[in-house]
Length: 88
Image (tube, rainbow, N blue to C red; front, side):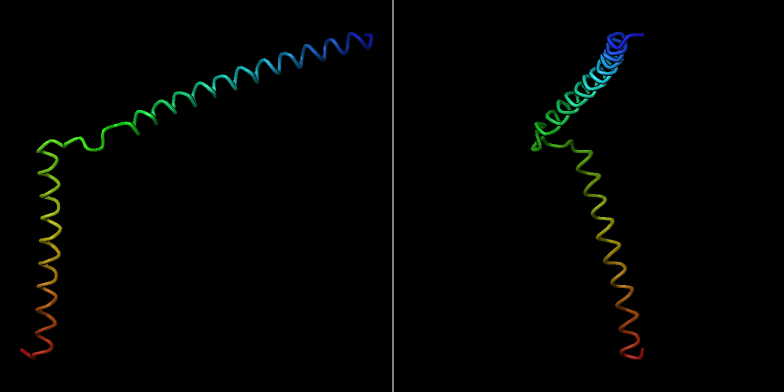
């Protein structure tokens, strides 16, 4: 095998490796472009869009439950403190 044949064989191997790398990079580039499109769609979504009444009602009910629990807990805790302070 002559030196020219070895160089030609090496060049062929390098060309195949570079083709594989180019294919991988182009697929990665396509995926990045797809993700960029998704991000743009999410960013341009109208944030001032009104929610439906069911969602608003559920959010208000959740807030009412939390507030009621805090009030009830503070009343129960306050009565224990007052009982100890006033010796009732």
